[in-house]
Image (tube, rainbow, N blue to C red; front, side, top):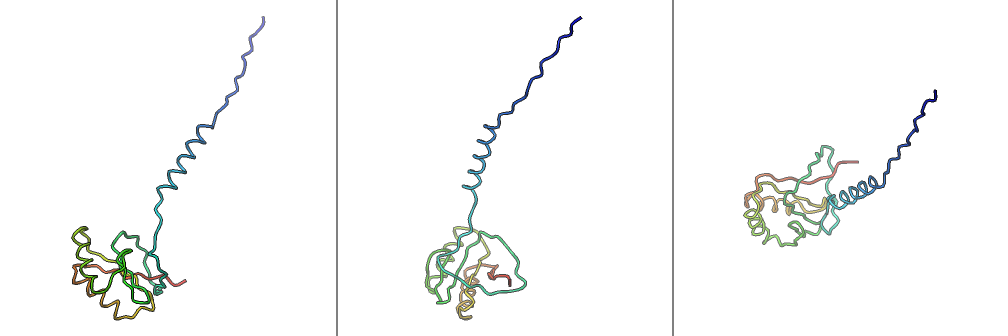
Length: 133
């Protein structure tokens, strides 16, 4: 008696479509990644040992070493800061403000900005600093 032998089938997995999907996912994540953007000036933030890291999308006031004041990326004079802060407060219901001041900025300028922010209704002021390396 003769037995029939079964032919063994070889399994071939085509990974071409898998490569396409991985490439599309890579492109998607590259395009949707948000990048941290600093204003167009170089700031040397004060260094502290007890810095806590917080990612916020809050309104930012940046004060350069020359005393230039930027609200987000808009250059303002100190006299116009209160008006601009009040306009932003009306549009967005936020109670916190991030203040980034260069370490060589005069202390009086920072205090004036903080006072204007409090007068404009901002309850929480966040002072930006860098961790000591």
